[in-house]
Image (cartoon, rainbow, N blue to C red; front, side, top):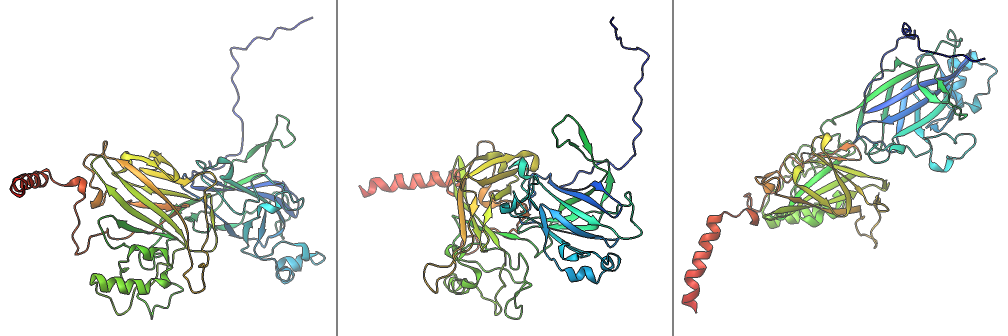
Length: 474
């Protein structure tokens, strides 16, 4: 006995009747709030942070939001709250309702908890670890650096209060904010209900597990306001004696005594060696340099830039067929930077990019003429500020340096010394750095013409004069 099956030519597939939610939004950083278990008085939520921006990044991230219905976090896996105070629970609405509850084991009853990622040492912990994409010390890298480190996940068990004591009464927290250490500024929207997240069955069978409810928070990178940057850039060149330092108060002046320094004054020109010492030790060098170069010193000197990281862009050479730049990174804080990256936008010089010699460098043509650089394998660690080798010596910043070469074959009309050889945007670990408002100049205020750009007429006259006087001397 056998059966033959043939396709029915009149069959029409019926459309699936599903609940209609908002589509997933495109964002630089997407935060997904998945409800994976739900009970009468509590539910379990899985929060996923995913980086979608090629230059976005977070280090030691701190995430905060606001509970709107008196919820509290009972326990967590893959993350922790910065403050744990059982007394907050006892005197809150939760303590009045759950009178027989042991709040000593509760993670947080704060209305606005601050949540951070766990360190790698707790990755295999049975209680708080053993969760994929967690316990990475709050590091979230771009996908072009490491796709496996572009996502961070944690879970939390959330308890509810009346009148929300049923399985379908789920209200995600509002007013989400996230920030990192020397990272971009993110602005987040409110959570939006989207189609439930689908994941493979953890048991390994060919099945799909759907979340009970899914909400998305879209966060986008914003341009920092003046004096709120987290890194800064100084300019120097082979034809200039002075360095154009970072802008005054580039990263803010909240901790400076503005009665002793001017937060709006233009930064003073400096000798090159002054970049190697902290700002507090540059005053003597700045005064001596101003005396040598006959610069006018204001009565109230400019305040510091106060940036934890600075970069020096030095135009090193300019010749007929190409030119070079020397880039130096300075770390002015004790905390080191692991897996750092640097992105530089060059409008006219981008096409002529040839090579980076001590870093890994590549073009990012889809990111508006940007060159992406990171440390070589084993050398992607920017050490922190250390004490001097002798008592009384200035602290020594962590440093990394490389030379970048460019060719003029594809950019024959480039004017390197007149601005084309300097970046229009610099990003360190996702944070946009403050750029100087002026370019290096030679002493006296006039630019020196690079050797490779000498007019042909000047070279010809020099040859004629030498040819005329040389026989007379012989």
